[in-house]
Image 1 (tube, rainbow, N blue to C red):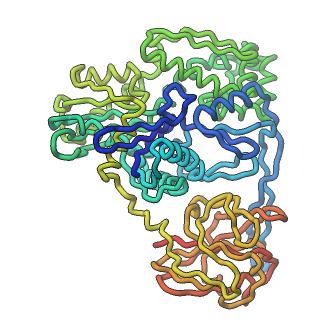
Image 2 (image 1 turned 90 degrees about the horizontal axis):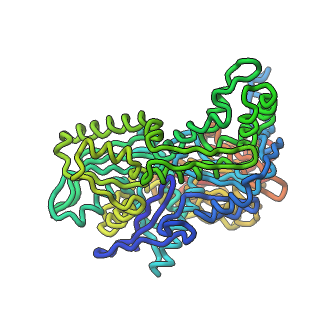
Image 3 (image 1 turned 135 degrees about the vertical axis):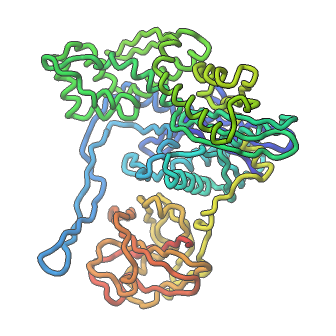
Length: 603
């Protein structure tokens, strides 16, 4: 069965379309809209995970009001290479430590989708376990798949997955982000994965109910991004996209504008030490709840406590200490988001938040909020004009404006669209489920776009056999999976680029092999072959020397004796049959006591 999924920054949803009826999937009974799963992950110290409202509730119950306790912890080692006095460089390993909150019961992850914008972000450490970003997204997609199967009573192995028009102004970052989503969907168990841009999916949903051909502007404004699309929809012909534009603005940004208005409660405008301005970098850390605890580290916290004696507003400094040390940032931002939602229908709302030294009792007027976001509204107006111009049209040639996404309900943006196109052309779609409904329609019609890079994740190994007769079998590289066929050792840290590749799970007992030809295999197509080799070797075996080491790539494997680092070497191979030697084959010198792993990426 083929389903549609809208994996969102704030919320995610699933739907199935049978050609006549749309079937939204019930996902989270604890949520005010059970058809929506908040895109939240909570992972506790036992590495058990909770999703959606269960994640939020567990975090609030276990973390809110808990004081942070910072301690220095060892997390691993990195290789240092420096030029020596002779011809050979000097190589040694340097221990790496981090300062971490050891009192945490768990960690809450919000807006994971936003991390796809960062080309440097590969994953995160949660306690002593590393999670790649595709692994985190797979947790949510796996749950969406399972809940759809439970409701529909059939296996859902095919999916059309939504994505924004762009994750970044850089096309390479957008391409990387989509490929990470693809891997996550494969990890979640989907056999076939296709994509559709989110606003285009919404156009498909409108298309099946529109009797005549229309030029539509789709205004898809979610928690992370705004997508603008001009398309021809309705009538007998399929939808046709004329122009599209992605804007890196979302509902989360509007929440931060409200938080900006609350900064006087936490030090904005305060003078310290006889007249100096309160440090602006401290205030910058308050614009997201995830960065607030950084100010509870010993050095900044010492300054905050000093300012309680030397500032013009000691109460604000006490409130700041409470905010950054009591883990109440998430709860505060939840209060802010609820106030923002109330301003959709109300001209004024109360924003009240109290905890220990924090005492916020504000009346927020809609006009105040609109003043805080005025620059955002003006920027969006410019982008709307540009996308219509890109389509070769005038504003008055747009027949209908389709609003979707939770942030599209904000009155300032409704007013903007009405001013530009007129009230008669406005058509609101279900803000939280219209995109996923369109995904389901696209899935039913088989119109999703399979990614051109899907071949990279096909299994190129046709034949694998070790001359030692020990068990070598195909696998897929993923964190927290078995590294060897004969030992209970696990891969605990992978470079993101290796995640999801087809590989060979070897027998570790062959680590002493000196054979010139230990592993025989056949490749069905040209591949880049990766050898993941323990970092203790002083010189490499001769068969491995034509491979090139991939700088900065490090794999970590957990064994009974601790966690060990492995280096990664690569070389391109044509299709055909090959054999490579043992870990201690001719030319080797050193102290390698664990076997290597093998992986391939089709070219």
